[in-house]
Image 1: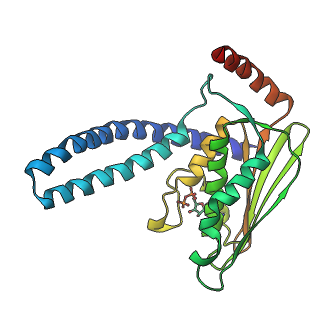
Image 2: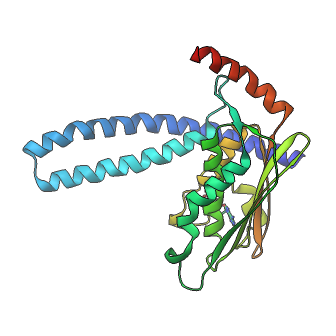
Length: 255
Ligand code: ADP
């Protein structure tokens, strides 16, 4: 629809802008980190304790900034033709991510009386052509957001489904939900409603990765009821077409 096209254009423009900023910032940060590294041993010899502490603060702030920059780059980085894409089983991704993220939602770390449960409902799905680590990052970010959206506890449901030419993974929470305006803007870099606790980059990373996997994101949300993110990827025949030449290439490389 017209509305979706406008949104895509907006995200593309933001992506290019973010990419330019990320590139320039990265150069500046590389200099700061590089000279910081040179200065450290020199200060150990000739400097005071206080000078070393100040330098450590500068370096650690630069490291934080460089983390932000690398997430921004994830958002705008276009897919490369020679990127290796292998068949990924979405069910395996879901299971790994549930166990990897459990410290964030399980048990003791949360206030008494607050319970978050993650349940999964996995169908047999065809493989997706892609990068398993990136797909795990997508689901990890979505789970973290779902946890943030449920300060009083609730349930996160992960499920996988498929039809003739696609495989999908869906995550639903019973949290605070979004207004239509928030839903419209949530994929934009730096859009956050979490004040200083948020960076507004989690969903931008999700968007970038899903784009590079030729997937689509569908968001439904209702204020004070909950949110669903459905992510659909091309599968079966398309995956084979995408994966086969790469397997041939890998074969040649290994030989
Ligand atoms: P951050 O988590 O740092 O704010 P994100 O890009 O991950 O950045 O999310 C952007 C915004 O989208 C959040 O601040 C929140 O307003 C909204 N959002 C994302 N996921 C959810 C969710 N599951 N429920 C309600 N709101 C959400």
